[in-house]
Image (cartoon, rainbow, N blue to C red; front, top):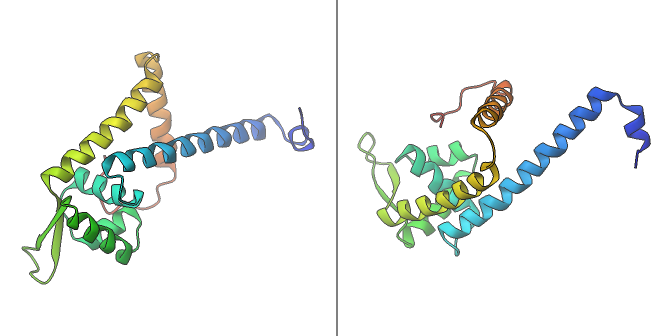
Length: 162
């Protein structure tokens, strides 16, 4: 059914709205997958703990403040989550070699294994979605997403690109 808004907008606006709809669907699916992955990481922890663990898994040990900033989390929230993760044997903290007053957090072997399993779950879901795509389709989609994602970057992130 066509609405007044649909008739009032031109072909470009309809295309942009359709793109927005698909991006919204992608973000919603991503949130669901992230929650499932977080539960696979540890069912008793908040999903935000998985974000911290995933960042540490990808980029290595760091000060809690660096991890919190990198994932866009309040420092006190990150600190509380890291404490809970430490109590469950998922992360360790050691004195910072450069500044003995500070600590550095890293995943324990058990934490690293839990992140790996959760990421495998995410990966298998992605592979299922693109299983029927040709290499050319996969390359084209990747290139378009890269162009889309880099178009909005106005500042350099404080952590390495994946």
